[in-house]
Length: 229
Image 1: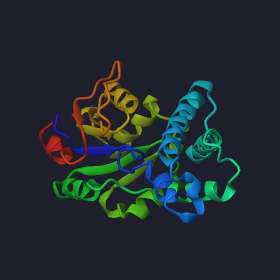
Image 2: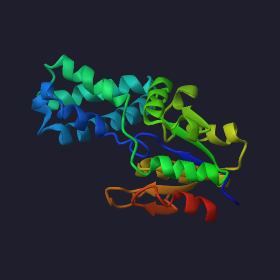
Image 3: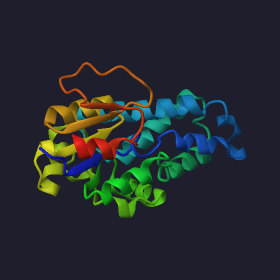
């Protein structure tokens, strides 16, 4: 089956989730963060994912922005920075303005020029995603931004992946699904999408039923993969 639709995870795939902490660390007002930001960014992301999975298991869905704030509070506490409300506010503001990876705009433009449909499928809340997409200037390069808010459960639930064929009226194997998260790739591959794992950290493949069809170090090859998958 020919690929017609290219779907991207947002956080960690199109947007650099470490950029909020890194940018805040360069602000003289938050000098305490200068040496701590890499660990804080790592803890923030890890807890954000952990809390989303736990909420699925417990059947206690909440908007991803709440999960993001809860995860940040844990990360700040671990770093001994929970006593700094202005820092917390600044980090949350910057999370709405995450930097896109450098290759993203050209990659998406190439897909559009080749006639592919493009969209985000994310655990992120609508408001979060709209802010990030707008801040990065990606609006015109995406046909849609799909949020789990619509179905009320986080990835890797099949209900989330089903939003793509429902929206684009395509078969599962016409979708190239791209994510930096191994667990997300596993869920999407098991669902029936063709998958490309953006493995920037050169991690081992997750031992899960769904396996990536392609493993990449960045997003530059996505148009070529979509054209020849």
